[in-house]
Image (cartoon, rainbow, N blue to C red):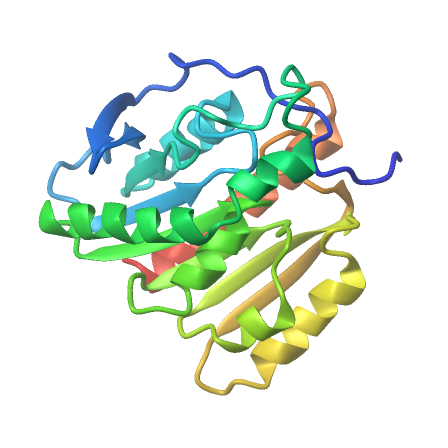
Length: 241
């Protein structure tokens, strides 16, 4: 299997994908997938990878989470500037210099506060690759009830030490950004904190980004992605609802 690359298998972005709708919340475009029950007080914030909030598989997952009874928000934290190979002026290192995560973390807190103002009392957050950087910061604050990180990128051991809420980390076997060795270190760091509940799992045969960039024609890839999605739902059902 080919080695992990952060931006391998980029999605074809589609502004009209998903069953939900795009709304404006605190000045940001946000894909919203509402729970069937309009009285749901449980929300999930999804923080995308570098390809942004229009990725069809990410929106499909948001719809699935909504079907499980959550109000789901997927903000465009990049404000119309997702990473793209079609923009030679912004290779990934340059793009990241504009999107390091700090501003996006502040924007995430603002979106969460807006959701709470609208009656969503309990909120969890899940981040994919780049998005895990934002989620680990949220997990170190009092903004959310629980967190999930999928194949995280650029997350440090020091950041893991600051986590305050139940957190699950779902990692790939083949991943230069979060190798099984790094995943094990995260597990050890979290396990040393008796006040934080954690769950760390490595998925054999998977590569970085597999949960939202899997090949629909690869049965094993689809199965692994769906297993990770179910692990996330189990976590949020336990700690957010």
